[in-house]
Image (cartoon, rainbow, N blue to C red; front, side, top):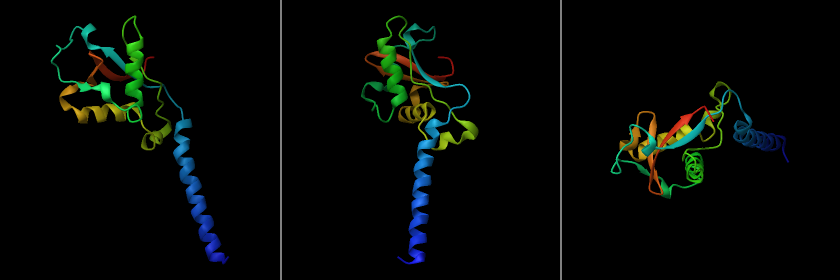
Length: 142
């Protein structure tokens, strides 16, 4: 093998390894307080909306595309005491590096806002799951 070809192949291999490492690295970066996607029943709130309110139909959301949303709604469905649920924690990571390479609960709320803009209620998004209206919000308290 010629020297130029060998150096080119080694260079491509190094770039591939660096890109793979960069894709795996953000999941290990944890700094600051964790963020949770929290689902609270809207009927229990003083400002609850009526049953005809615009809301995202969360019953058919994909677990792969919306892991934080589906985890929070599943937890809320399983929680019989007050009906609230939360997702697994998400850490932003240092200097914003993680946000560019990973999926976050902030991304999911933005996607839900784009899906049904009328479902936005301030910083929360209204979703309907199994006949119950929930408010989804990103919180820092577990």
